Length: 75
Image 1 (spheres, rainbow, N blue to C red):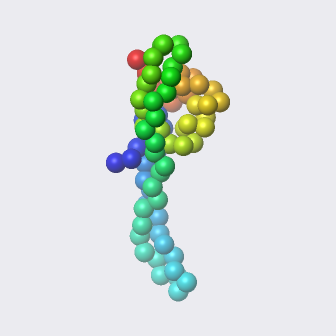
Image 2: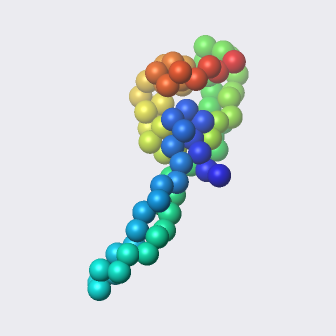
């Protein structure tokens, strides 16, 4: 299943609503990407499954700070 390594975000249950207001179940999938990120503090690459919103935040604050905010240890 597609799931973010940091935030744990995964697919959500939703409903399609037709013009006649009939509701049918469906899934809203999260946009998970497998990325290889360089961690300068560790001096190596780390491969992670991240959502695109995770990636945008990591670009701003860095991998280790983002991991610390979510209580994930990168070793």
